[in-house]
Length: 224
Figure 1 (cartoon, rainbow, N blue to C red):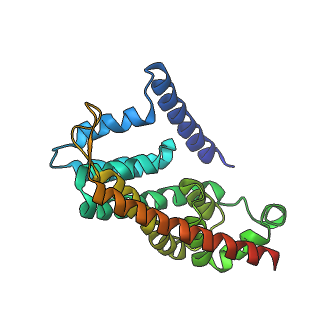
Figure 2 (spheres, helix red, strand yellow):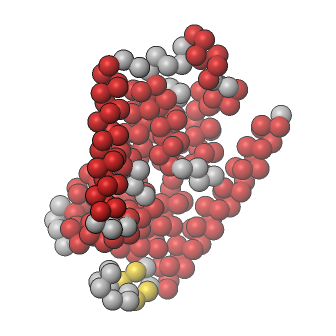
């Protein structure tokens, strides 16, 4: 790793430590952070832009994508929430991909490649769309998949297309969960829209169905 990459990694580590130290000192949980962000974006004409910016920064801090996705449903409603989240989440996945690609540059060549790249990594490169789609559907950590895809230099077009398709069921379900929460978030017990929450549960079950199918398929491929 060259000096420039070491410097970039050092800045990233400092940013992470500062974020976790601030949260620890002020005893702020991720949920409380989301409540503060909701208060910031609620009623703001630039709320969607703030949401997009937060999602772009989220991979750098390893902040929960699920909490922000639920917040989108609460803030923007089911339709706009899904649209904003699809754009924001896939943009953030490309941020993580670019970071992985940058730090992985020059690390998987020659003897290093022989030692580090196993059969599964080779298959990911040959079938980037299918490999990433499988990982999205089986709910592997969102950012980890993005970093890994960039690090292994998986084709970015296949990665992005698979991420768009693979994240849709989960995005819809969690946005619907957020849209089903009504009232002033955090100030009192919210009222619930049972129809919207029910649709969210249905979509979540669909996501689990996809996950189960792709897990079985992945096991069959590995055994073969």
